[in-house]
Every structure is written in C-alpha cells, then in structure tokens.
Image (cartoon, rainbow, N blue to C red):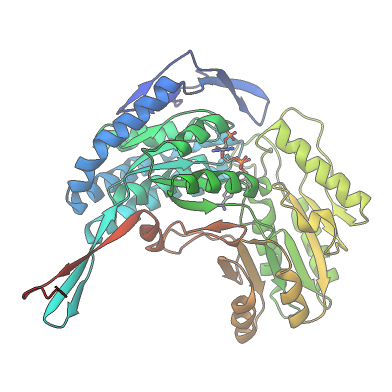
Length: 485
Ligand code: NDP
C-alpha cells in the first residue's frame, strides 16, 4: 500500500473486504506520475457468485425494513463521508489524478449529498390511494431487487454513491463494478456504508473490466443495471439487459452545446466555458464542448478566454494550488492528443494549448480551437479531455438548429442577459440537463441525465426513485363479484 487511506483488499463482499488472488492482477496507476500505487485482482467467478448470492439473500430483509430505518443508515454514512472528506479526497486524487482543489469539494461531498438526500426520502416512498366508486385501489412502491452499477473512471466516488444511495433507499441491494482504471474509491464507500450499519451483502464492490460487467448484466438474479460510460458501451449493456428484460439507467456521453449570445456577461460566459471544458481536465460527460459564440462578442471572448486559461496551474494534484491535473491514463492522453492533431489537420485555429508537456504523468495543456465548423471531427465526437471547440453563429434560429444537430443530448447551456431568450432557447435545445448563465452544476436535488443517444433514465432527485423501484397496483372490490356465467 502506498499510503494509509487505501482500501484493504480488491473487493468488498458480504460486509467485508475480500481478496482472491486467482483473479488477474490489475495495476492501479497514479496519473500524475505514472507510478503504480496499488494492485487489485479481477473478480473470479467465485467472487462474482458470492456478490450475487449475498446480495440476493440480504435484499428481501432490507426491503422489509421501515424506510426511515434504511434512511438513517444512509444518513449516518453521509456524516462519516463528510468527516473523512480529506482522506477520501486524497484517495480520489490518487485514483483519478484530479486535483485536490476539486476533489475536496465535489467527490465525497457530492456522494454524501446523495446519501443524505435519498436517506431523507427513504421514509416517504409511498404509493397512493385511488377511489374507484364503491371500490378502491392503491399502489405500492416496491424495490426492484438486485441492482448492478457499472461506473466510469472520472468520478468514482460520486458514481458509486449516485447509484448506491437511491438503490438502497428503495430497498434494493447494489453490486457495484468500478472502472478498472479507478478501482479504489468505491471500496471506501462500501466500507463506510457498512460502518454506518448497512447489513452485509447489500452493497458489494467487485473489480474487473468489461467481462465482469458482462457477467453481472447477464445474470438472471440481477433486476436492474445502471451504467455510467460511453455510448458504445451503453448500447452493448442496454442490449444485454434487454435480453433479461431488466430495468436500465444509462448515463452516457455527450457533445453538448454552450451558446453565448452577444449580450452575455463576458466574464461569466468565459467562466462557464472554462468550467464546462477544463474542470476535471475535461473528463466530464456533460461538458459543453461545442461553444457557440455570437459574432459580435466572439473575438473579445477568445481574447479573454486565452488570458484566463494562462492562469491554469498544472502540476502536482496533491498541491491545493494546482487547478489542472493530468488525464486519467496514458491511453486517454493518446486519444486526446489524436483529437488535437485532427483539429489542426482539419483547419481549426489553435488559440492556446495543444501540447502534452514534457513531464511525468499524463498531462495535456488546456486547449482552445477557434474557427471550428460543424463538420470537423472535434465538433462531432466526444473527446473527453481539455479541448474546447469555439464555433461562430449569427442568430438564434441558426444556433438552435446547429446545436441540436448531434446524436447526443446530455447537456446544453445558454449565456445571455435576456432571460426570455434564455428560456426560449433552452426550451428548444434537445438535452436532458441544461443551464442558464451557468454550466455543469449538478446538485442532488435536480434530476441528471441525457436524452437522445446520451442516455435513458435519470439519476438524482426524486426522479431517480422511479428508476430504482416499481409500482404494484392493487384493486380492492368492496362488494360481490359479477361474472358473465
Ligand atoms: P466505458 O464505456 O469504456 O466503460 C464504462 C464502464 O463499463 C467501465 O466500468 C467498463 O469496464 C464497463 N464495461 C465496458 N464494456 C462492458 C460490457 N460489455 N458490459 C458491461 N460493462 C462493460 O467508459 P469509460 O470508463 O471509458 O468512461 C468514459 C465515458 O463515460 C465517456 O464517454 C463519458 O461520456 C461517459 N460518462 C458519462 C457520464 C454520464 O453521467 N452521462 C458520466 C461520466 C462518464 P472497464 O473500463 O473496466 O473495461
């Protein structure tokens, strides 16, 4: 172990850490240095079986508990997460490379928010009474059973909580498989949940790559699958889940538009574009990577943006002065550098950045391209790195049509001082999670998720309850039963 906040073993199953060195070894690399900081072992069939059996066993009793009792455990876990925020943030930084100046504020804290919010809701998950003349009916909100969560590598603590908290609040068990790139954080979430009193088996974390995910999704004992990942993986997982008629939530990628009108507050618009492109070194699914800037403000916007980007502090993510960390992996850096090369080759104008600095770790400079056109690769494909594409536009109707001309529909943002226009434009943008004069806020109180190819279902808010529970309807006849013969 490289430092003392690391989890004790590869898996957390049936209430305890579990190791099985028969599983293939997977190195955990600290993205800021390229050094190996831990080794975890892929779940063997025996580990997968224990996760499924214990989840199945524990779930029925959990669902039968009072909602407030379930909620109390989740809220206690939220308190523990907040108390240990610094340790959890350091771990998140080691797992992902994201700077501590971010992880201290948006990872364990956001996970704790989800545990607190859904813990609070757990006691109020009721159905309704339906008057039917002399008869009546009622609905009951029931758990689905065993849920599988499959995570991406950009927000390992947050994703583990955003899936786990509503699942557990509704009376389900959760088996979570983190991305093989960032396997450590979810184990700590499991540890804390059990420390808070969660009965064994209800939140299991097992490691592995796509094969382990595939095995879980295909298993007949699994009732629901929630994936955060790319669209191609989403298609595969959705299809596999459909075979078993399982419920799904798909939180997938995007190529979201951020529209800046001439009358926008320039400084705020630049801040929005920075938050929507360079936070977490651009590894955020909802990023507004197509920045449409109206003709009258565009040169001033680019000038101020270039100045502000010079203020990014790239360096040791554990130094709280650092504001830009590395990419999560060598592979992701190669992908991003490939897109930067395509941007140049296809004729976009490089305003700043564009290079991978000569230093250890998987760093890429914050990069801005101007004069980007709709057909360029960097305007069409999700890059998942610190690469902003700035496009011009003349009028509202034009920008709405161009913003919607994408298979994705995760997010969209508008900057303008004209609030009527802001609502009119947002109303026409095809996206699930939208922002007016802001970008990338994700409070647990608001539903989060995409339309079109970006996803199915919603995480967070009361909307998530719909996706982790099912309705039972009961018709109650008060009189005699009539029958035709
Ligand atoms: P991937 O789609 O490659 O992987 C997502 C997860 O699915 C990983 O845990 C992966 O395992 C697993 N997996 C891969 N293949 C299968 C399969 N056939 N069956 C079951 N599980 C499988 O995404 P990344 O981890 O590379 O994350 C980046 C992507 O995630 C980006 O495209 C981004 O847009 C999207 N994303 C979406 C978010 C949202 O909320 N909408 C949030 C964050 C990211 P392994 O990696 O171990 O092989």
